[in-house]
Length: 399
Ligand code: C5P
Picture 1: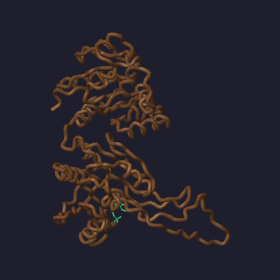
Picture 2: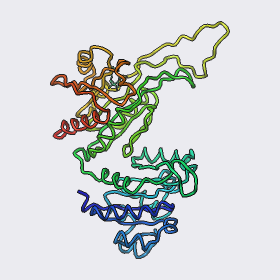
Picture 3: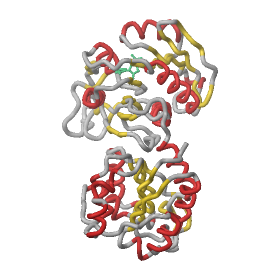
Picture 4: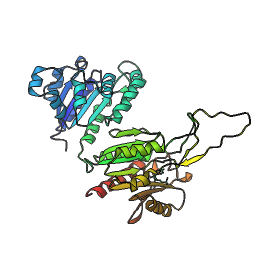
């Protein structure tokens, strides 16, 4: 399945570069061609000779190598591969990617490429945890770059914590997933997830208990089928999946704007637990207790219904899937909701506290479609996601 594929492998300057040599062996063993690029700092850790010997190809190092420009320009080099892999991705390389810098061969290739990019960060734990690196990471994730690792553990510098590059086997597995020619390849799917936060004043908000686990699992399952996923998420407690375009929002109104900006899409899965109401008289300043002891009176305004707006809008995706979290009479309520909202399917579940579903690892759902109600047995949220992604893929195959 991987034979005939080509990776452009950028090796940055970190001690983990030695592990990249094992990655090259794994890739070559699977029939994947490797075009290696070594940064100046990378060449301090592994030699061009060992990289070239394992890859069986010339190592590219310099932006202004005249022979290279005569044989193959850097723009062309950036396009030869099915996937660009950066391992180790140093703090400096991540910063260059986040900022769109192009001051050496590696960063120029990363800016010029039109193929998917997978990065395996590796750096000192303090550098990884620094707000600047975390900002850069958030930016590259939002740009659709797939990130694997780093792992936590003892580091070459003697410190302990997250920063070790993912093991070559794990990076290899991520490469396999990224190169898969799944049935949703070329399809754009929009997923909303997580709760929304509706401000009461600058420091307080109204929220709900949604963890974002189910929406995250669905986005990952769709990605694994090859879809190009836009993941619009409220402030969830689980991190967004790698390899999807992440749009972070706070309020229902922000979420609607992000959903509309992401269109057109072939399918949409609205798994977010959107607040039905927002505080109409939210304070511009923090609300204060006053001496009268009177509690503030909050006034509420209805939020836009994102699912209904999308389902009835001009730019409607071919398949729109909504969710219904109910605490009683699940099938009847969800069936009525499907018609009221104008979506194609409703994934309904019972979120009464005794089910442990909200915030838990499992889900028991009923899929409501024009054909009726289909009860799925209780299973892990990852399995629900996989099954749903398969059904979505089947449903939009010919649309
Ligand atoms: O009406 P209810 O909140 O039960 O509907 C749930 C479904 O509608 C979910 O798919 C949710 O993402 C979506 N929804 C929405 N906008 C709202 C409220 C709910 O998109 N304001």
